[in-house]
Image (cartoon, rainbow, N blue to C red; front, side):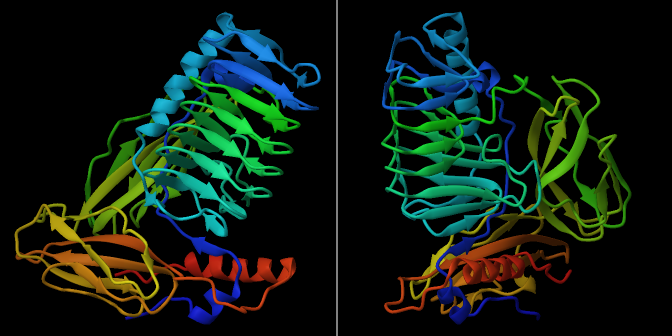
Length: 448
């Protein structure tokens, strides 16, 4: 069995810890709210030399104060008029779309500072905090999407930052759905659109590459720059169809068409997160998924349709591949594994369904972190992790009739605490180390 892991020495040498998630995305359109840099529900209040790119509006409230000295560039002020009302309606739709999107990684209780995240849906059951730098790695995909679902508050400490690298766009592809209020600390440099149920406060000198959109409460500004990459095209909601894709069988030709609607043809299709089952390919011009599957298992991925105006919509799919024509599709659950912590007992069961019990569980490729083991009879992953890093592992379930199902996971083990006296690195050295760790995390596992 081939092991892929990162040693504790490497992990503790870097100042930022990387979390690789099984990505998933949702189709997000802000509708007419896309034209607003700032939108409040009750009031919009500014102090100091704030610049807002795009419209400034409020509805159902009517008070907009502090412009001037605030400046609106490329837009106008809309005080509870038809434009602001429609933008609030569209904001509510977008907010609910994000809220209904399934999570790929639960980060509840973890500070976002020091993390590097890949495209996916990141959830906090309560509050989320950022102290320091958060890096969002688009992995070279201009359609990469990052969704953050936060149960209550979002708070950043002074001088914190959110940066998008490697072709991702902080203006168009990062969304923060906040269950109550968001507060950006002094001097914060923030990327992504904030969609808050209640209020948004940008304290002195906090700057955003993204919109500040509050549904019910106030938006409070103080000497900020709110940059939205220009008002741009107001994109319609683009829908990818069909809703689900049929399952397949190893060795049996597969042919299914995905299509786009709601935008302006022609559409270009791409796999924006996850991977198709091995042996299948997506035609970017026609949306045809063809080929013969080579590997049994359950595969989750997102297909994005981009129309002639550059507007896009996405849909998350899951395809099950049976091991033979006489076998059912065997599905392993859960879809993702929760992260663990160095030196803390870990326990998570993987269960199979769709076949004939009993099942036997084995590791088909990759490896679990040191200190953890897989029970072949129950599918329980347990033990005390002795390695930090992210570990790619594919778990296979074989039923009583010899039929096979599998699912690939990335299991993240976080460090227990910062090591006192650990050496610090300059920016150049840190960048090299982060690139090395990222490359290790993306290393392809052996086929099983």
